[in-house]
Amino acid sequence: MSLALAAPAGAQNDAAEAAQYRACLTKTETNADAAYDDALMWRDRGGGVPAQHCAAVALVALGKYAEAATRLAALAETPGARAMAPALLAQAGNAWLLGDFPSNAISVLNAALSAGPAQLKPAEEADMRIDRARALAALERWPQAEADLNRALSLDPERAAGYLFRATARRMQDKLPLTLEDLQLALALEPKDPAALLERGIVYRLTEKPDLARADWLAAIAAAPESRAAEAARSNLEKLDLKAK
Image (cartoon, rainbow, N blue to C red; front, side, top):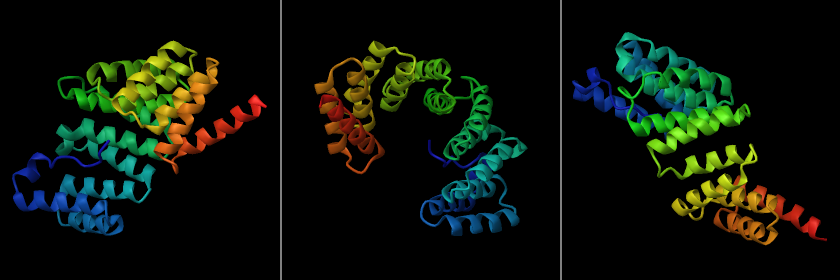
């Protein structure tokens, strides 16, 4: 999920302030330290919500996830940010996920999703549900993760990552035929996704189809040789070869 928001109403009415907001957010991607300092100076000059938001985004870029998440959640409660509250809470959830705090992520994403369809666009709700599913999966709450992904994919059926995450949730519940269906859908959307190829190879191994598993793991390595998926594929290939001897 992107950590940039559209400028709030007050900033949109002031072209100079809106430009400063955009420039600050852009700088978080190239020089987060400088962006953070700029945001604090802007805040002290009365920059309000845009300045505080930019500071929090800079903290995410600096890897200070807990502090960023705390600031984003607090900002969502300020009167000047009410219209932005669901998006700010969603960003807080994403930051908690980046910091490996899944329980905290679930808490703020619950609050973000409570805004309901009147405030959330379908794609926004899908993003939030996918993030919450990731947090639930980190806690091995697989049925709940699957339920969130069902809803996310009903809102946005072109999400390859959604099918991949749901496949993992289903595999962990031993729903292998449904797992394979999801992986076929994910790979139809992104044929060279190494993570999906790795996962499908695992399903093929579990269903006693070693040749298909090998083909998928080799394809995952070829697609992204330096990726974590490729590393896992190599490990699985080694185990497959040892079993074959």
